[in-house]
Length: 235
Image 1 (cartoon, rainbow, N blue to C red):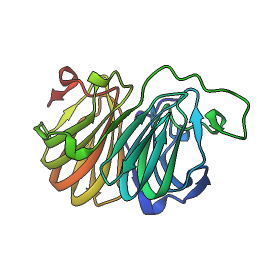
Image 2 (tube, rainbow, N blue to C red; image 1 turned 120 degrees about the vertical axis):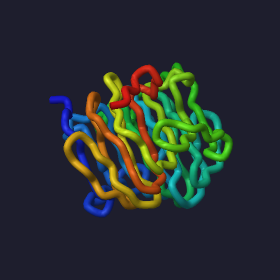
Image 3 (cartoon, rainbow, N blue to C red; image 1 turned 90 degrees about the vertical axis):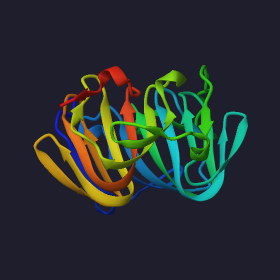
Image 4 (cartoon, helix red, strand yellow; image 1 turned 135 degrees about the vertical axis):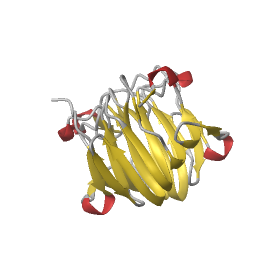
């Protein structure tokens, strides 16, 4: 059943599990009935792998390394973001942490590690790589937003980094959002609930749920599908 209520999780409450990339805290998963998964993963020289049906978005949180993606290599730093379409072989080298969005949520049967599978990848879409410093900030209903991955990219999900001071209540009829707090403090009102915010907090906001934030905080905001201004209804 699709998740119809907001979810609130603290990173410190989620136990890490081993994965081909290193160690992952799987905050939002398929078990939640979510339309997308959200992980925070500590990557240490990941094994090259791909997913046949899953899109992933990597957003580097801390550390440094290199992302091998298809036939290209990208130097990583905090704020670097990569959109990885299905069937694209990828692997992170180095020692870094990343927020990883999975659409649909991660399915272990859809992870193919090179050298452990005879299935050949068949990529059809190109990956996207952007640095946060290359994305100009724009004023938004929530504050100031850097829209790193958008619907102009023909993506299945968008990823913004938003500095929020006072976001008036609004909702989306078609869009699910995931907020992951990077820094600062505040309150996010979601439906009839109010959540205290601190770094590491993640909130899943289903479609049709009014929400608004107060305080002074910076968040990754994931939009599934990507943000459409016509789908933002102020209440």
